[in-house]
Image (cartoon, rainbow, N blue to C red):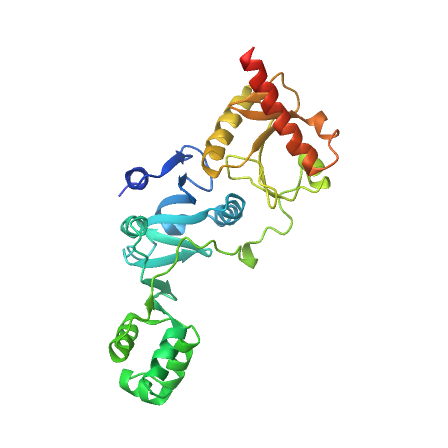
Length: 313
């Protein structure tokens, strides 16, 4: 399947299930789609070959997911070596990866029951329930391991949270007469892995440096439709060098803002505009008048009300 067709299927699947979506597929962004349904926000990258995911895109997807309070997900068709199986959860750079059919099942609240681990498909077990059911059945580790034809050491690892092959997991369920295979919560926000943490960030320019000095902690992006986002204070930031670029930047930021429901602003060197696409415009020279993050947020609110008053005149 071509990437364009795969992308269309993803968008259609979201729309059919009541998600509001915004597309960024026509730009070199670390994500292609953001989508919202009630409190659930998804940030998606669509790739035919999941091994084509670039590490710098993965890094920014992790950071954006935390900034947007969104669930990141890669939807693909195959890796370099195999087709993706619909019931299996894969990973790339600690980001969850699903096939199109697996993604559709997830939207229908059917969690994947297996994950790819060191090249094999394994099941995630409810370790506590496994131990409790074994003890309730008055079986020792040795007795249950012998019945399941596994080693005591393996069973001990399963009771500590290690995954098992689907064959072993189903065998344990049959012996204990209970369900211990867990569906995998793909929507859980992953931690940013240490190896991908952006310790130095992208070097701040003067405008972002001023915001940083005011106490606004930022994640900075080079492969996204915005320049930066607040790590603690919800705020989306874009920068524009001229009015000719301003409208395009405002359009992209407005699309993002409509899904993630966070305030935004565009910093520009000079502009006659107060707001564009309902996004407040802040000139660089204004930044020196702020003494705190609260001042910034107050100024953005003031620009919003001033714009409304001008429209009413």
